[in-house]
Amino acid sequence: MRIIAGSKRSLPLKTIEGKDTRPTTDRIKETLFNMLQNDVPGSYFLDLFAGSGQIGLEAISRGALYAVFVENNKKAAACIADNIHFTKSEKESQLLQMDVIPAMRSMEGKYKFDIIFMDPPYGNLLEKEVLEYLQTSSILKENPLIIVELALGTDYSYVTDLGYRILKEKCYKTNMHLFLTKE
Image (cartoon, rainbow, N blue to C red; front, side):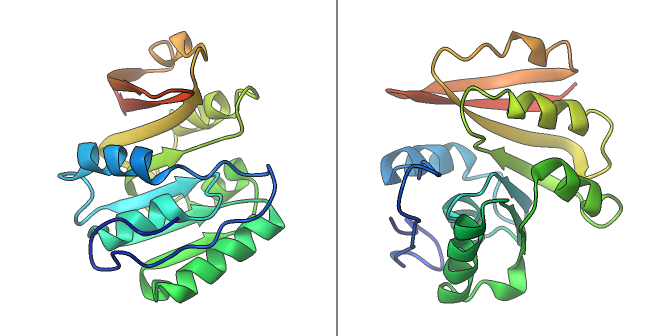
């Protein structure tokens, strides 16, 4: 696993052993960031359920001004901290080792994000909880881009009822990225 492009290109990243996280493959990450190439530079980026932190670190490498990583798993958070240090990204990032909803509450009035990426554990509807919270949150800038990684076949028909517009769906072999914005 490595940073693919930008100022920190080719730097290797750590990941934790076991099945507690599902690191995004380099190929999927490259596809994702090719779709985001015009949105990332100058953005504030929120990486929820951050795992190894590779998505937020890729955003920083590609010109995001700042990234906040949220991860409640102790081993994964330690891995993110190591990756932030190794890539010398301390000044443009913050790690919150806590559950996602309390973390977002703690950011109210402090941050406004252009892009939110979330890769929650599949099958627990945690993405729905996050989207419900974001309906009334002040941490989103106007016209935010919200990307949700989901297992293929996950029902997300509720998103329009929550006030989101589907911009794009990108399917891979076993998962997909759903691109949303607020209506």
